Image (cartoon, rainbow, N blue to C red; front, side, top):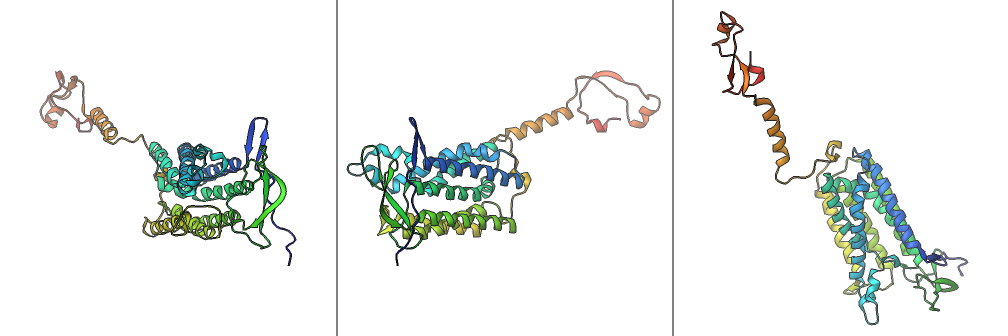
Amino acid sequence: MDVLAYIPSPPQGVWYLGPVALRAYALFIIAGIIVAIVWGDRRWVARGGQKGTVLDIAVWAVPFGLIGGRLYHVMTDWPTYFGEGRQPLDALKVWEGGLGIWGAVALGAVGAWIGCRRRGIPLPALGDAIAPGILAAQAIGRIGNYFNQELYGRETDVPWGLEIFERTNDAGQVDPALIDGVSNGTVAFVVHPTFLYEAVWNVLVVLLLVAVDRRFEIGHGRLFALYVAGYCAGRFVVELMRSDHASTIAGIRVNSFTSALVFLCAVAYVIFATRGRETPAELQPKEKYRTDGAADNEGGDEKKSAVTEKPEDETVNVSGDADTAQGKNAGSSVKAPSTKIHDEKDEP
């Protein structure tokens, strides 16, 4: 039976306003980052943290994450950039697509750790607050893959198959993989929209994370680990459906191995990590980190000095015992240098 309609691909993924190129992939990545920051900050405040914290940490985490994502992509798909006849400088063109999520999360976590350390807040607690937002950002970013006509699966005839069009660029080249090209209306093939499968899976895991977070007192990084495990489970299945070029080990895609390994590590963390959730007091910014403990000692010494030290030229009672002082020598006092430190509460 003939299929009357498939899902069409967008005619192009890049628009030019004069010399300025508006790339759908970059726009959706930016939109996802904004969603993750705004939603993550609201969740952080709801847990007792200070407003604006997530944005401060994002200043460190986002650049690290973009670099990590690109590094992972290039390392696992190196023939595309360093093979025969390739252009190594293309590895720097992140705007043309190609970000590995595991590299983005790993190096992004390093950036977040730096930001958390500078601010004096626990990294695991921050991870729990931003986990749903990060996965929502990943789902939004997959829409960019749709505009780029990339990350699709094997050819298919299912009703929801995705039409991949031939695209033509200004140089006259014709290829479905031309990100800066425009569709000429010719369908090259119909495929599984695996990026759409992944996006839908991500949304389902986001809903699960929100439900678990409301139902249980989960903290200390366990919700973040649950996000990682949930994403990896879906990504493992999606990888089995993809047919685009990828590095393999024993005929199995590298991303499949990574998904399985990271999934096991995340599940282990969920099982063995500290139960319960951090208190609001634990989420408040601390003073600048001091490894020598000098800050505490200085504060203690200042308090001690304020209580115990007295001016040398102070009026002191030199009479005998208290009863005698109240008798014939009551009220007698002389000016004398202080030779003994008195505590104010012990003085008559």
